[in-house]
Image: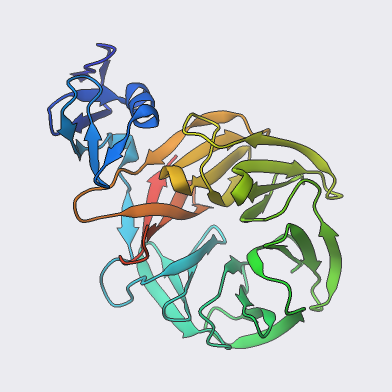
Length: 326
């Protein structure tokens, strides 16, 4: 147990700066929210005013597993992350490939049929992997087996730029695009539903909640928006900022039971919300170090844990996936 420099409460989960001041999680949240990052990785300590770096993170922010930065299959520029509760699938912009992982081990890797570097959405069911390919020439929603065998494709208008997809039920797929439209594609591959969502001009990520409501990230508005099962607008939470329940370009979103996880990309953290959008806690916060400039661009639940996909801020570093216990 270590005493927090700010509140003097003792805690096992502490965050230590190079100036040797330590913070419990609550105080560190407040410190990070009000701090200014200098020269990309230095922080100005709120206690002594010294320019410092984070040298020790809280135990509950340490991943139980991480992979993708080195090894046989490096995640060069990952775009999308999905899980079926058993394995993780990732689409990579640099290689135009899909990789399948389980317990940090690579199970399979296969090329996307159109060899596009704009595979901006991926979803996985128990028996198939679906990848959204968006280019100026066409927009295709392609399904594959876990072995990488091509199954079928649905082509949308070339004006549609898919940003995210998710399996819902009966092999139906829900799709969001860059203009705030939502589509449902049936098992046959035909579009069943197309709707412009109210108060929405961009869908960064989407998830279907346990209540059958839909939650989406409106990335440029920095909000999480909720719609009923008929896609009628309900409410929104968030807005630009660094405090809890505020966002800076939120991208990926996923849900499990009554918990929603949001990749608060611009703020370099993952927030956990309840099914109504109320703040629960920060799962993890990332601070740039001397050699790593990363931010969360994908989140998904897997086996009572949360997988977070990281990408380089300037897309100059390899990607990485870190798995955290709830």
